[in-house]
Length: 50
Image 1 (tube, rainbow, N blue to C red):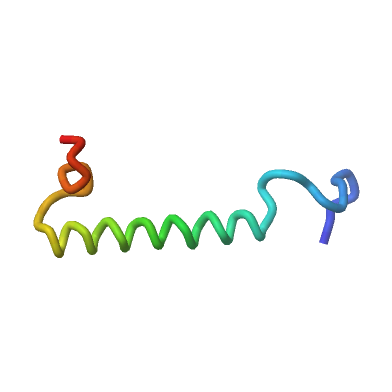
Image 2: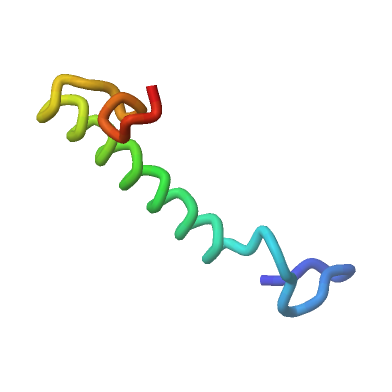
């Protein structure tokens, strides 16, 4: 559903892009928790940055 003053295909914050972004953020968060649980280190320590 489009608003009267918006184009039919807006570029940027589309619902599909926001869904993908949210799902990838959730995946990254769960991955970070799993790394901490398995290794006993934080993500930055695990990667050797700290």
